[in-house]
Amino acid sequence: MSEKKQPKRQKRVALFTGPGCIWCVKAKQFFKKHKIKFNEIDITKNKQAASDCKKHTNGGIPVILIENKWISGFNEPLIKRELGIK
Image 1 (cartoon, rainbow, N blue to C red):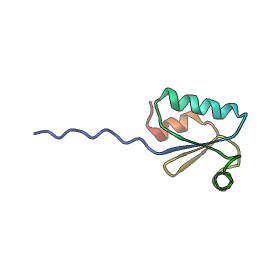
Image 2 (cartoon, rainbow, N blue to C red; image 1 turned 90 degrees about the vertical axis):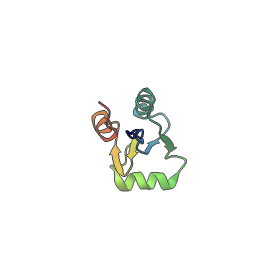
Image 3 (cartoon, helix red, strand yellow; image 1 turned 90 degrees about the horizontal axis):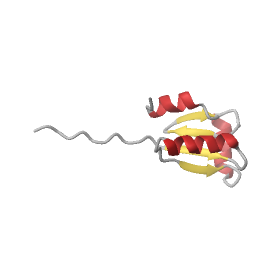
């Protein structure tokens, strides 16, 4: 008997955003287009999240955390590479 392949688990994705950020909107649209589930965190409402973003990046938004990889800004090629999107 052949074993069924388990569906590949999607990596955990957190999207750190702020109000009025066009690149944050573009990141959300990208994730929705590619059916990527993500947790959105508004750094203006979450001081700990804002502090974590500053600690791991240059301080701009959006910040994207894929598993344990921090990405500063909407860097589509890097996001695709991290998520295995062609």
